[in-house]
Amino acid sequence: MVGYSIDEVIDGKVLWSEMTPPEWRHLDIAALQQLKTIGVMEPVEKEYFHKNGSRIRVRVQGTNFEGSSEGIAYVQDITAQRKAEKDLAERDLELRSNQERLAMAISHARVGFYDWDVVENRIIFSDRMMRDWGLDEGHRIDTLESAMQLIHPEDRERVRGLINTAMLQKSTYEAEYRVVHPTGSMIWVEVHGSVIFDAKGKPIRFFGSSIDITKKKKQQEELKLAVAAFHNDRENFRTLFKQTPEMVCILRGPDHVFEFVNEAHIRALGFDATGMAVRVAQPESVEVHGILDGVYRTGKTAELREIPITLTDRLRYFNLTYSARRDEEGEIDGIMILGVEITDQVLAREALKKTELALKSAVRSRDEFLSIASHELKTPITSLKLQAQLALRRFQKAKPFTPEQISELMDMIERQANRLNRLVDDMLDIAHIRSGRLQIQRSRVRLDEFLAEAMLRFGPIFKQAETSISLSVEQSFEGDWDRVRLEQVLNNLLTNGLRYGNKKPISITLRRSPLQPSFARLEVRDEGRGISADALDRIFNRFERDVDRNEVSGLGLGLFITRQIVEAHGGKVWAESEGLQKGSTFIVELPISTG
Ligand code: ADP
Image (spheres, rainbow, N blue to C red):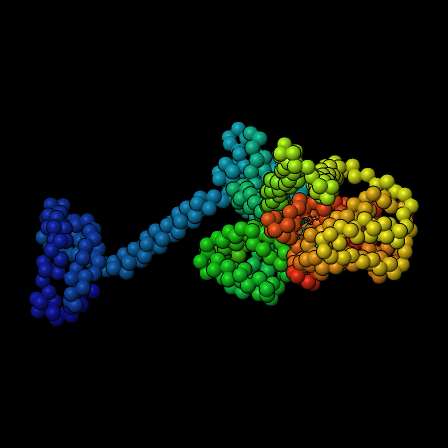
């Protein structure tokens, strides 16, 4: 047992006292004491040193021989037994800890258990399940029916069906449903189950677990609602963006590919650019390309005001906002563009500016006109006054006029009076035209006769001005026109011919309009100072002149009145000139048919 041979024992190599390790020696002392007093040594368990130095577990007991101090000891090696016991204890501990772990796991997993004895129809719930299902001592369930009562009425039939299926098809049972506590509050549970059958295949036990999944359900519900809300919002925004009159588009990637464009953008571009890169869809908008690259690189929003863009051949103006789009990691992956068209506002503002300028120029013209008019009116008056003073002085000095001088004086007075008369007439006409009261009184007029009479009137005047006038009638016309007004037209054209014609002959031609055969055409041609191209039309406006006001006097009203009269007859008047110093032709066309 301790590794020594009999010989070694006989040789006295084995010492009793030293075989026991020191910590057990107190037991030896106690045993000897017992032997001495009662002659018996009760069994003790201790250790011996083995020859090889290891320890063995032993049980020792002994007794003295009757009336002797010698006796016999019985030593049993219990090493193996102790080891077996120890192993058992360890296994037991292990088992117990496993069970505890399981129990702990169960309680942590918040799982409840049920067990239904199908044959007896007795159902038992674990404590946990009781708690989950809102049961306590006062509310217990014992049969399947009483458990069923706790299931939400809307779920009850479905659950019953699933239980039956599991029992009929020998399948596992799995269901999610609502449980209504006796207090009225409601939870969601996930219940699993297995069925045990007897030898004949009849279900005898139905057991499984129940877990409260209310929180999970609620989260699922919230998630569903959130997803629905998100989709709804997304849809709303999509619809809004689709239909808004502003241009909205989303570009993707460094090549700025149109991912989303709205209807306003399609209308503006004339096509749907979805899937196209901006450089392909709008190759001409070079400035825009640079801006997009910048926003994509820096992420800085670009706000551009009143950007002119030619779209479908029309110049339009936009306020544009380019902002970077970022992915979940915050990296720029596209650009959003919002374009608000402001073409109308810009045009309105420009029109307003033009009107303002026109208004300013009108005010300037009026002021100028007033100063010219007063000057123009003063000139003949001053001249008349001078003549009157001169005549008076001569009378005072008793120096009578010769008949020639009187005639000259009268001519002069008449000329100045006429000039005054014409100025006043023009001004009155202007007043009439402004108030829309330029009256046309039609009567039968033969143009050739009308022109011949004018020649008689103007011939001497032109002669006096050291020039001449000629008339050529290619065809004569008759019509219903206002004779007095036509005289006014001709007077204006011929007087201008005299004033601006550089004393060169003037020719009048009457013929049919080569452009419109139903119109008679009257041309008054001079070889004078001519008219610059830009003034050709302008000179027909009120107060507009193509001469320096100090060079030739005038109000700038004659041609304006001429045009009003001709147009009141349904006709047209315009000027043609090769340029300055190349003479001018004034053309009047009147409709031959009346009405
Ligand atoms: P006014 O002669 O009093 O200035 P009008 O309305 O008759 O006013 O003429 C307007 C302007 O047209 C003149 O100031 C002149 O510059 C230009 N004009 C008119 N007739 C002629 C012409 N025959 N040749 C050159 N310029 C002319």
